[in-house]
Image (cartoon, rainbow, N blue to C red; front, side):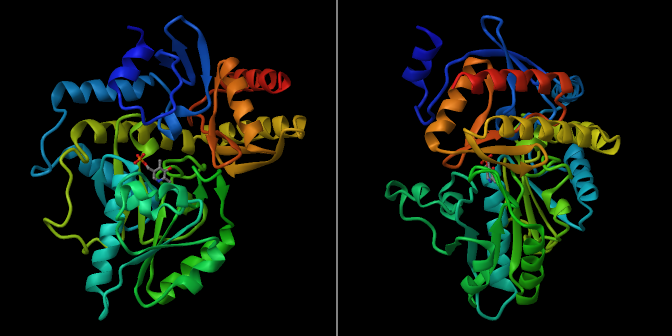
Length: 394
Ligand SMILES: *Cc1c(COP(=O)(O)O)cnc(C)c1O
């Protein structure tokens, strides 16, 4: 049986998969089983934040695996405590951290914190959470309901939990708040929705307004977090102080991890929430190594240079091919080219893969770029050479 046949026979077919068999990665370059190289501008959807085969990360993982991979959360876990400290210090916020295993799970934790806050802090219970259209918050029953895209709320999985409402833009949030609203949940740059950043001033005004109304601000930084936008958190870039922040994708460099950070440290008590795997030795040792590598690149200016360089290359490509793209969108190393149609988006993705360049789609017509944050200039140059060849072929 070929690998494709094996997959099709035994793995549930929930993805429209590509069948290139990658067997090795070095930095932002991937190799398939025939030895062909691919430039990776996708990083496993913003997960491989320090690239493939990163020596510092793999050493940290191997060293930890040889000692202890996992014991339960009924014991104190040294790398977990250290990672929580590190994340809190890098964020600049006075917060506590709960560790989970994915973005959806981190958002579930955030919603639980908000709901308990709404139950205990007000005379009349508040429980409603407002999210935005085109948002994406995960695939569990609750987070899929929190996701502001009707196509995700198919009747197959109903009934969904109550208490979620959607508004088209940030300006519409105020009108949607009632005396049962406990929180607003949003991404600062909508990733899956089309790499759409929100206006900084508008977000700051919203944050101040929610504070006045005692409505919690939850920022879903599952994709924007861990230096993706150039700062440790997009919330840092936007200079706001959220009540709750969720993280996942880039935090473990490929090892599954999710996290909820909140300044409301007293809301959840022993027994209120938990996870068997969350924050175990392996994932938090990986998280510590990732933050060592990336905070260093941030401090020495390399991260900033990389994102400026990538941005320039992308803008040049957008200008060269104005017949295909409307505009360039995004922040930091979370970028997109808005194609003139969904059809063009599809063609660009296909042609790029043919040139052995991995890019992603987002929204209805955006070509998305999420390179590793440690990508080299040479890899960026090579990727854009291939991208140019792909675009010229259309
Ligand atoms: C990817 C993503 C999620 C879901 O994360 P999983 O790890 O797939 O559960 C949630 N929110 C945002 C903004 C994301 O980009």
